[in-house]
Image 1: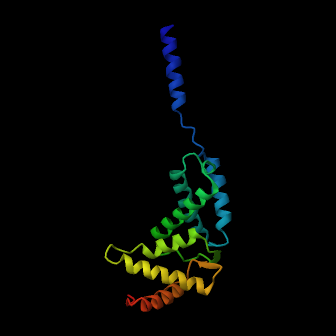
Image 2: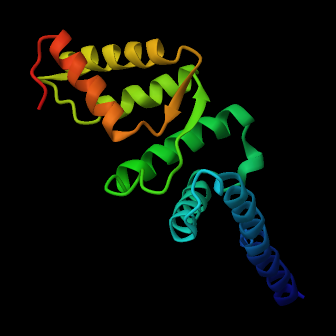
Image 3: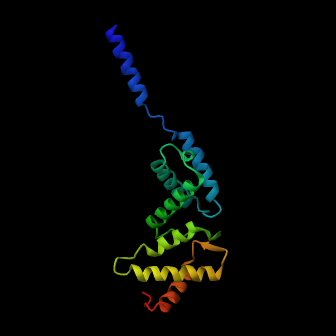
Length: 174
């Protein structure tokens, strides 16, 4: 009898330790299809889109072990922005290639993301200058189009605006 109780307790313990993760193959596949469909217009190259969507799924699994439904839409939006920045930084050599520029409305999150991109190379010695440059670039972008911003910025536009702002704040452009 004692042995049977121990076996039952062991079975219950093992059962309770089993991984009840929502991240099943079907859950991942469904999410993959949804994200892939969402970004297909902006990223028409299949291999680049596959790489991008796979990265997003991997990071979502790490950040949200209970699934995307476990957080609010706002939290998911912030996390998506964070993951997108990580992908952009990790793949900066080809981050813009193949991605169709799209107008997105100005939001505090868009401004914050752009500011972080501008400040990513700042050091303690030049942070104030980079902040001034960032403020100037954002102001110029809002002058060009007060309702929305083109994402991603074209390299030419970014260089032109950065050069103008560098001259305005008295810092020679690199």
